[in-house]
Length: 277
Ligand code: SF4
Image 1: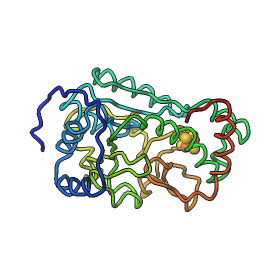
Image 2: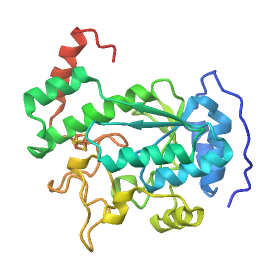
Image 3: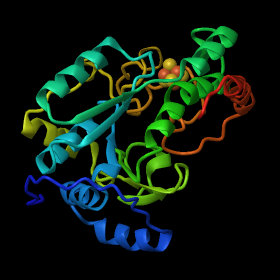
């Protein structure tokens, strides 16, 4: 466990950039460090140019709690897709009360992208095909996050290697080439799910109410369900899909089956209307 003390850090205004070699060496040094030490390194290095990105699941909340003990006024970014469960909004408010000094930034999808998508493909388009689902995730989650990351040099995530095959090789700090080469910091990379729960219980942190109802991974209301005994922890995400990645495109590029053309058409139309994205 880290001995890191609470401290106020000076805002960092200058860009902090690493190349692959430099960050590779740092990642090696961080690999056996506790999450608190990795967080402290990230906050010390990037200051206000780093933010925690969370959907208020157990890993993100554990990280937020650790960060709050180091620097209470951390930036916390979340994306409201417009389709979240009511319980998530209630929990978000509860967390803001518990950690009043965090700077919570809620990012929304651009209505000029959502409206043509929904009007052309239907309000529940995600059930119709994997490309439609990926398009919805792209418009409602990935694009808002891209906007949020634009002014950052680093983002903290709650990713763990044991979550899903596509996450098994993540490092505690890595260059995020999918997001203009900023640094992606994964302090919990080598923790197991049970360690996260132990931490949260020991700290007495309230958890998202849907966990009590059998959910193990929580996203949009319409695309998430509780899992059945023996199922993989991410089986409740997009449960109707067979052989499709349990990812939305935020954390790794996805072989898509061709939704890009439709997205391009939607974004292209709105671009002509003055969209600066
Ligand atoms: S999880 Fe479902 S509703 Fe949410 S953005 Fe993805 S496809 Fe759309």
